[in-house]
Every structure is written in C-alpha cells, then in structure tokens.
Image (cartoon, rainbow, N blue to C red; front, side):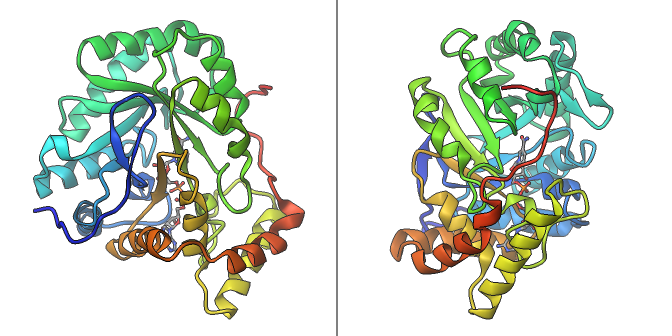
Length: 323
Ligand code: NAD
C-alpha cells in the first residue's frame, strides 16, 4: 500500500529508537479545532499522509472533546495500515471538563483513549499542557503512574507538553533519568518565535526526543489567518497578517516558508503541523522535499523576519506562573 516513490526524511526521536517523519500529522484539526472537517476528508488526509511517508500522528482526548481520537482511530482502521508502520501519540490530563493529572485519572484515561483509537497501545503518552497543573504532582505522581502504564504495555514512551519553556527544565531536573522520553513544545520554533532554540542543548543533554508543534503558530503564519480562539495579542496577529500579505504579493506562500524554517533544524525530530485536508498534506510534504532538494528561501524568510521584528518572540500567558 505504501508508496516508495517519495521519501520524506525520518529522524531519530531522542533515545526511544523510534524514527519519526520530520513532518508529523497534528490531528487537532480532526477535532474541528480550525473549522469542520468531514469524516471523508479526515480519512483522505490520513491516507495521503501515510502514502507520502508521514508515519507520526499526534492527538489528544482534549481535541474536539475526544472527536479527534475517534476520527483518527477510525481512519487508521479503515485504511488498514499495519500497526508497526505508524507511530501515534495521544495525551492525558487535559479534557474539555478541565485538568486532572492524578494517577487515578491518567490511568483511566489511557484505557478510554485506546478504546476510541481502536488500538492496544500508543507509542507515546504525553501529559498535556502541564503548566495548568502542579509540576510537583507531575513529577511525584503523574510520571510514576505512566511508568506503570509502560510496564503494562499500554504505552511505549512518556512525554510532557506545554507552552512555557521553563516547565521542561523544572520536570526534567527532578525526574529519574529515562522516565520522560520526549518533550513536545509548541509555538516556540516558528519564524515569529524561535525561543526553543536556546533550550535545545539542555534537552539533548537530558537525552529526550524533541517534537516541535505548530510551525504555522496555530494559523498566524497562514494566508487565512488564525482561528477566533487564538491567544496572540492584536499586535502579533496584525504583524503576521502583514507578513502573509507581503508574501502573497511576492507570489510566495508564507505557510510553506514557515514550515521550511521549522524543519531546517535537525535537532528537532518532528515538526507537527495541523492538517485538515489531503491538499494541505501534499503541500506540506512537498515543502519538506523541496527543503531537502533546493534548501530554504533565505531571502523571503529574511523579509518575513524583518516585518516580524517588532513582535519577535512575543508569546502569551498559559497556565500557572512558572519560571
Ligand atoms: P499549526 O501551526 O500546525 O497550524 C495549523 C493551521 O494551519 C490549521 O488551520 C491548518 O489548516 C493550517 N495549515 C496547515 N498546513 C497548511 C498549508 N500548507 N497552507 C495553509 N494552511 C495550512 O498549529 P496546530 O495544528 O495547533 O499544531 C500542530 C499539531 O501539534 C496539533 O494538531 C497538535 O497535534 C500538536 N499540538 C500540541 C500542543 C500541545 O500538546 N500542547 C499544542 C499545539 C499543537
């Protein structure tokens, strides 16, 4: 079933032994996070992704109030892809009802996720947006509970996700080596905000795999612009809109340039892009292949960086206040 014509780069994910495609399929759009996606379009997107060499898929019970997990699980089942040909992460601790990182809740959560995904195990279980919980609970209760799920064979690896970069140092400095395998950072390795770069040497020293999500800054770096719920300031939104308009005027696509920018750092194993159509999957894989064969369009990226200079590295508050 798999096409052998197109080769999307795969990169090692920390010490996990997993080789993930450099472009990963972010499945929050399958929970309608960026507008309604039909079941047919969802299946077509997942099928196209697999055909073009994407082997890493990310979802969460939070996305669409469990819809994303159900739709992704169903798509993988309908397509009939062998289990050892894809790598899947889902999350625990964040739900539409609120946050709960207790051992009891996350232990129940994986069984619920596996049922929705129609799987026996997931490759990675991430604690979702830990800055909204107590980081000491994550260290002392949640991560130990996830080790038991590893032993039970329900998950292969453990990850943590969130926005403020300080959360990663806080947890990784306190847990036993090897108990957190992966971190997932978002909106911090995009053209407008590249602050994750400073943390890469530390993360590498800890041996964790690095996943960077939201290379398009959750829609800021697209011609259509971000969804209503986007937390960026009006200033950041309008600067990104100006950059997108500038690219369009020059006959360039800001999303392609933004994805290529994020992909060009090979210390990041996979860049998770939210995709809601087979067309977007094709465009994003083509952008990655063009990066390999031709390289980055430094001139156009430089022009975007100049427009975004006044808002460079601007972010937004998320969760409790941590260093
Ligand atoms: P993103 O930066 O990937 O942007 C997604 C938006 O860009 C969607 O509207 C999508 O339709 C659009 N898009 C994608 N390809 C495009 C193209 N070629 N041209 C024009 N528009 C295009 O943001 P995201 O979806 O939030 O992040 C990607 C994934 O990373 C998520 O789906 C999720 O799996 C993961 N993620 C995790 C966390 C977390 O754990 N806390 C946070 C953010 C994202």
